[in-house]
Image (cartoon, rainbow, N blue to C red):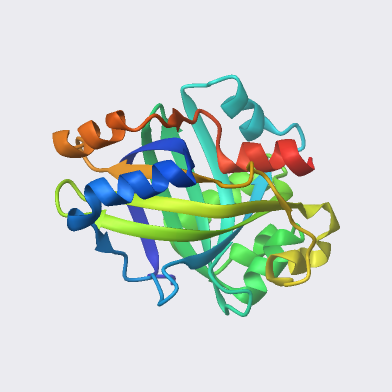
Length: 237
C-alpha cells in the first residue's frame, strides 16, 4: 500500500519573463514573499521531468489546439541520485488544474520508463491504478526529458505560489534505454528559451489577491499558452 499520495486543486497561469521583469516583480513583491522550504542556499532547486505521451502524441496535440480539457503524465525527480520518484498525472481545464501525485521507487520508475507498466502493481493506491490504466490502455511511452532550476515563493493569502523556472532545457527520450535517461547525468540537453528568459508560474486556490494581480498587470510580460512539455517537444522532437 502506497500512502505517499497527494491531490492538489489549483488555478495556474504562466508568463514568459525577462531578467529585467523578474527583478522588477521581486522588488514589487519582495516584502511579501516567503521562501519555499525546498530552496537551498543558492536560492534554486533542481527539477527533472520525464514526460510520456501516446504514439499519436495525443496530449501534445490537445495542448496545441487549445483543448479545454487536457492531461499530462510524467515522472519527476529532484536529484539524479534519488531513490524515490514522483509519478504525476496533471489534468487541466482552462486555468484550473488538478495534480495527482504518488511516489514510486527508483527501480519501478526505470521499469515504467522502459514500458513495463506492471511496475505499478502492488502500490495499491488509486493514483498508481489510474496511471496504470492510462499508460497501458493508450500505449504511453517516454517522449522527452525536461530539466530546470526553480526559485519558489509563497504568499500568505489564497495559498499563492510563485515559481521562476530558469535555464529550461530538454533532451529527447528516444535514447533512454530501459528508462536510465531519467537518472543519467550525462544526457545532452539543449535550451528551449531565449537567453535571459525564464518562466513564471502563478498558482493559487480560489482567487488571485488584488494586490498580486495589480503587480502582475503592471509588468509588461507575455502570458504563455504553451507548456514546458510542448516547448521541449518543439525543440528536440
